[in-house]
Length: 175
View (cartoon, rainbow, N blue to C red):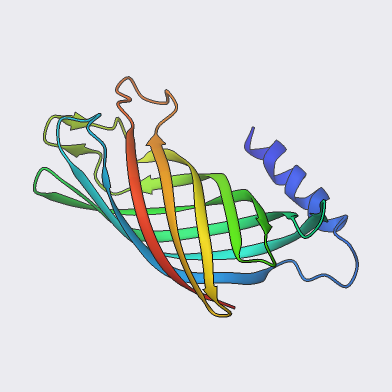
């Protein structure tokens, strides 16, 4: 499976339109949030993030644009008095419109956590996956605020897989 993903990315990179760089930094920011009531404990996550545009995009009706992105995050997950490093990276898509004032990103990231047990909540192991959907408003040329709902779980890699949903608010600098 890993070999297939690498081959797909190489083919996409090679077939990218000429004159387009592989990465175009989009937003650098911070966000934080709190879990819903799905778990035994309440969890908090704080992170720094970087989003880059990928070269594959399509202009849709009127001024709406469909594009691809790559995201990376690093931060802290806190719950039941314990803290752990959480880092993730992965591909996504973005739909933007209203002269780039609104942005709806969604995607899935490979996630690593340094601690997988928080009190009664056992996430099974260090390898997780985070899927997300968000809604960003670009207030000014360089300022973005946003909301994001994300779900982290191990997709059945381990016997314990409670997952966690986190509602996050963020602010970022737009390149």
